[in-house]
Length: 359
Image (cartoon, rainbow, N blue to C red; front, side, top):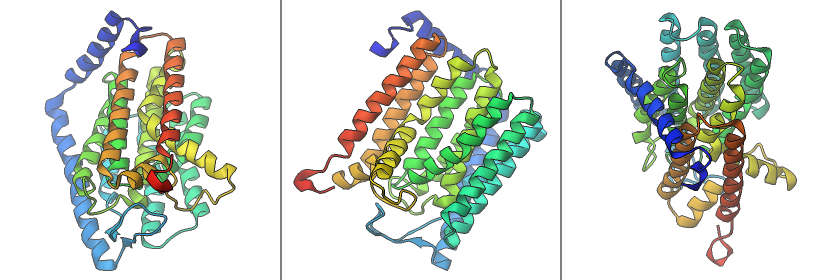
């Protein structure tokens, strides 16, 4: 692989072994029941939410601003929210997470998930939802400061939370995409943590995503809803900040580009699409089908291949992140820049009109 030439074969192998050894060294006997419980809670939540949505008519209807073709229940991500909140609470009580961070993760998820749950039942103003997201960012920033993090990391969290929450909301438009991307990104964060504090909550988020995914892929029987997509964005922002916090200031320049790679597919697509819509003076905050993944799904006539393609990209990106963990900052930055360039090219290609000018 040409991108790894700057790492060196022996160094890349050593980093891969380090990550695998850290995972193998975890107490899986103790962790496995919790992972199964997280998956079961997410699955039970999706099943119950589907019954609730059908009973109360909480359905997303097809339309020109949506990518699905049949009325589909929404709000299934509530099980993921419950599983993540319980995971953070238990890890805080057990001393596996700093208590201020555990409290911040729980409270921030309640803010984001609560706003999303309300919006799934009765549409809220986008500015009210944004206020909840900013408040969650403030809560996470306070939690980091309480755990002893540097002020600049708290400011980064304040900016990161609204971005990640809205990116996951914007990108939740076809079957299985948002959930599978969140699970893969969390898995990447777990490997990058090398068995430290971020590993267990990251794996619990992976398990929760796996519990929900059969309800949403390959054919969606229920959507995440704003409650689920927003909570996934907040959970990933929390894991990213925890990863940076445990790395320490000396290692920070090297970990930043690696943290970007597992979420690069969503960040590139969402950022470029948002910029394009703003340049064209469109109402960027309302629903649309202008993202690259939506254009591809419309052109192909199926969601599955697009979700799998994004999954392949993210699996490759997080593999690069793990393999490059011991390389120099300049090389890491160059690979991250190459990823952005390749993603930009892919975005441009994906958004080209299909045969006959239709998309």
